[in-house]
Length: 345
Image 1 (cartoon, one colour):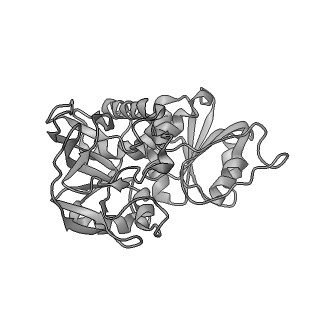
Image 2 (tube, one colour):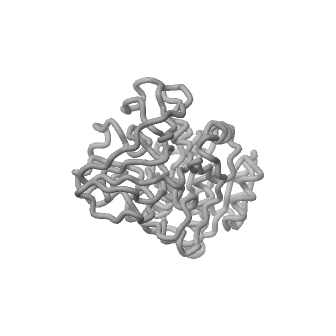
Image 3 (cartoon, one colour):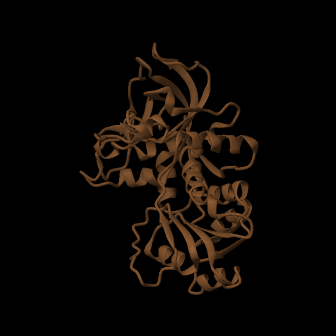
């Protein structure tokens, strides 16, 4: 079968012909219908030797939706069912993995893989082998190009919002910084699950247009007076929460500059920024910081249900798997609208 494989660190992935996997024990073989392309894939491709514990080569792709094609003798699911893969694969033995919280696996630092397309063969192929049914969530009639991005872009955004939901009742304001593949879903999830007003910030006009289509109440470009503009939207008090999907020093400084006392900051983006915490200092009194990572399997089922109800919709650009180099280049240059999705040729 055809697959897109990472064969050398720092080098572009290469198409290859590999054997179709045969499921054993409790394994499940899924015929891939769609695979999302993520900035995390770029980080993996560009990693220097030794930066990640993964062993080369492996097939990329951790946002995967498809149809169950074959089962190992111990697998307790049905051939033909349509599913999305829960992306983070933990040790499977600790308490957190047992509760479907593989994203916070106690043994994560000891593993040589972190999931499909992350050290294990992923979904940029015709088929993907899944080690356990606990990594599958049914999608029923949801289209594959909608379901696949939910497993990271949707789940990560949902998990980040869930951690702030206690503070986002009526008459609150939340700012989403960075309205790309994750941010445009965060806007929709905030509108669907909280009473908060949603303000959006980006450096691109087309991203602000996407934020508006996603339900944001207001959007603004990053400028010298952005903090003042956003504070003015709250009568000068500051916002209740910020979801930063960029994570640079500039965006972190903007975030703490617009938070009201007791405000919440969730840093989701991996932009390498730094925020110095000291007391007393310039940070808002009562400021709380979280670093959410991916999400839980039960939350993925909730995200799929939201999408199935029509409450959230992923804006996607489709590419055949053979055009993956073009999609990767466009993602790297910030030219993808919403989420890029690869489909088998």
